[in-house]
Structures are given as structure tokens and as C-alpha cells.
Image (cartoon, rainbow, N blue to C red):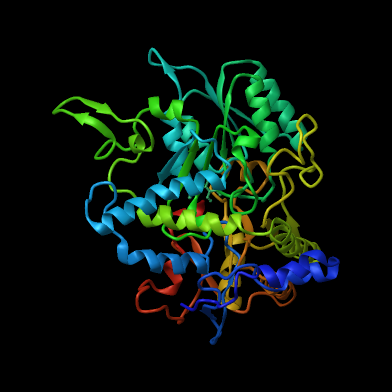
Length: 488
Ligand SMILES: Cc1ncc(COP(=O)(O)O)c(C=O)c1O
């Protein structure tokens, strides 16, 4: 693996952010921040190598180089946390506990908000599902959610009393539908994504929080996609709970986090019964502790939490104008280019997501804003999405996501039951990645596939694939993509 040596660029981009539109789009010619692995070479099916164009940030983003360096710095001190009197244990414990404060600051948390480290966003939302208020063994309300959600923010609620709403074709209409459902009463929690992992459209979380509270419900925001792209301030937006993952936020090791009001969490069922979660345990009884430890039984992912926290510091230091200019320039270039390719359709959920401004709350679009993040969803007429993804990888060294994005209800409703394609990008991306995608799609349209492809274990792969992987990645190239999420 190669580490790019591009500096974190504040000076270089400052002039760009001040300049006119042409110069501003120059921002996108370079990564906004250095990421580890930016220069890795992907083998091509026809022979030779090319710089890997990573357009799959929405699945897992590459580690920021600053975060990789930090990891190397703390790794020698890696030891058990909370339980050791030794020097390394004390340092690891300090790093781990300090990570909570850093993450709380990053999301604008209230002083008493709990910060619980988890495996990922999925884990965080499952944890919250176990903490919904229960009176005399009965849940005191329903969880309300939309049909646009990632399974992580949909399936945990199916196991508790719930109601779902099919989103309207507009954000404005969707807010109305949610209002109508909330007005029936009996909703304890509104669970909503901050940004769609399918289309990148941002939801107005401040307006949604105000709506939930108007009807006595709380709100949890699935910020897995939002946090890597927008500033979040849960105190200002009055969001009760927020969940996100480190691996989408430029931190390796996949830790997640749940931040939010401590009362439900302190009363809820411990998420992982075990060491560290108790005040006292007898042979057949236990008194659970409160605070984050209640839900973090067992040895925690200290490096996951530490790198997640370090990544939030880098993101917090970004100049917001530059950050958004960089991402918007790549996105608009890609969307405009896709529109020029015969047979390509770009998918979106809401017709007003570009212009929506929540009317009843202060602030643009409600807190983290509206619009779109660095995610573009599309399909190419006449081609299976999985085949296009295999072609892009094998013949052009481009990585993006195909399938149903763990959002089956939405894909079905969008008329894409067998999936579509998703290009996603972020701090380490450059305009050239989008250009390469457009060129490859044009080529596919004009001259067709340059290789034969077959379906192997449910996934399109090039036939007679002789490319090799590094010796420490022993899967043969044809099968490496056939992960359990293939049909997701
Ligand atoms: C919007 C959204 N929510 C939740 C998740 C689940 O995240 P994780 O896999 O880190 O649990 C994802 C992952 O793609 C996502 O995009």
C-alpha cells in the first residue's frame, strides 16, 4: 500500500474557495485531504495496472493519512482498557475515554449526553432498540420510520412496536405524512436517516426533530452517511440520538458510536451482558451499572474508538466552504456527465431535495442542511448493475457499489428490484475519478464489453481471470467480491 503525501491542504485550497466558479471547480482536481492507499494500483483484466479509482466511499472510506499516522503512534501503547494498572493500560484507557469527549464535541453533544462505542451504526441502532421505554413490560410507544431507510435503521425496529410511512415524492410531502402519523399519537421514537445511502439526499433533521418533539416523540438520526459529509450539531438541532460508524468516516477498524440522552440508555437492557457492565454480580443475580459501560460489556475496540475520534478532529478542522465546494464540484460534474450518456438514469427519491428549505424552523434547511452528499445512484439501460460494476473494476480499475444497498424496500419502490449502481466519494477523491467513470461508461455504451463475464456464486466476474492479488489476500480475483452482501 502507498500513502499519498498530499498535505491537509488548508493553504492550498484557501485561495480556491475565495475564487470564481472556474477556479472553485479546480478544488476538485485534487484530494481535499490525504488518505492512505490513494495511489494503490489495480490490476486490469487486459493486463497492466492503473491507479485504483475508489468511488465506494459510502461503503467504507479510506483512512485519512493523519489517522493512519496517529494509529502508528498509539499502537505501541495498545493494551487492555479499564482493567490494568500498568503504564500501557493507563494510556489506552485515557485514549479510549478521551475519545468519548472528542466525539461528543464533534456532534455538538449536550454535556450529559452518553457516548457509547459500538461495533458500527447497525450495532448502535440495535442498542437503542433495546432501550426503548417499557412500562410494566409494555413498550410505551411505537417507533416510526420511513421506507427509505438502510436496513440498519429499519430491521431493529421490526422487533419492537412500530409503524412505517412510505415517503412522499417530495421532502415537503414526507414531512406532512410524518406529521399525520405522529398526530395519531403513541409514537415514542422517530427513526430517520440523515442522508440516504442510496441517493445521497439529505433529510432536514432539525425540522424532523422539531416535528417529533411537537408530538412528544424523540428522534434518532442514522448519521452513517451524513457525518462524513456535513457538520452536525445535535444540541442545536435538538436531536436526541445519533448513530454513525468510523469506517465511513475515514477511520479504520469499524467502531461505531451512539450519542444521546442518557435516561433511556441507563434504564435500558444492557446491550452486551458481561465484564465491565455490572456494579456487582452474584451467581444468579446482577446489578447493572449505568453510563456507557452498561452497554459496552467485554473488551472494547479501543483502536477503533481512538481512530474514529481522531478522524472527527480532522473533519472538524475542515473549512466548510472548501469541503462542500470540493464534493459538490465532483458531484455536479458526475451528474451532468451521466445525463449526457445515452441510457443512463440517475435516481433520486425526492423531487425537491435540491431546493427544500424547512419552512417552520430557523436555519437553512434545518440544521445540517438539505441537498445531496457525495453519493450518486444510477443505472444503465440494457445492463445488469452487477455486470457494469464488474466491467468497471476489471477493465478500468474503478470500484463502486452495485446491488440494493441494504435498502430493499426503497429499491423495490424505485422500480429497481435487481439493484442499481452507486458512485460515492469524499475527501480523498478527485475529479479525475469521476472523469474515468464517465469515460468507461461512454465506452461501454459505444463499443460494449471488452471481455467475457460469467456469473459466479451470484456475482458477475470476468471469465479466465488471471489477475493476481497480494500473497496476503489469498482469494482468487473472481470470487473476492462474492461477499454475503452480494444481493444486498
Ligand atoms: C445510512 C446507513 N445507515 C446504516 C448503515 C450501516 O452501517 P454499518 O455497516 O457501519 O453498521 C449504513 C451502511 O452502509 C448506511 O449507509
